[in-house]
Length: 66
Ligand SMILES: [Zn+2]
Image 1 (tube, protein in one colour):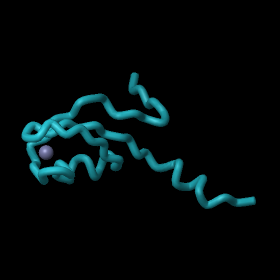
Image 2: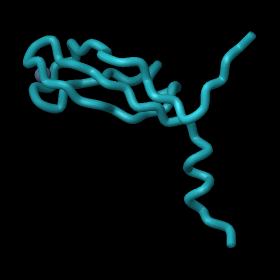
Image 3: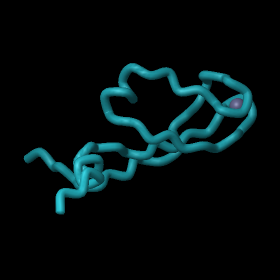
Image 4: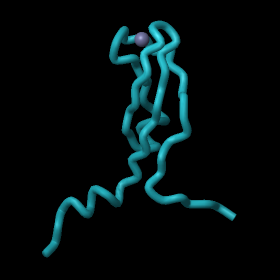
């Protein structure tokens, strides 16, 4: 019973929440940390890239470095 969906849950896909500085639209984007580094987040409503993070990302698992 190898469920392929189990593989997907292994990928860290935190949800980033943003608020648009231009139209105040709040939205969430799910992406990997790598994507978050490279990607320009755009407001889905007015396409502005002037967005600010609202909350810390939700991690499925916490990896604390000691
Ligand atoms: Zn906007």
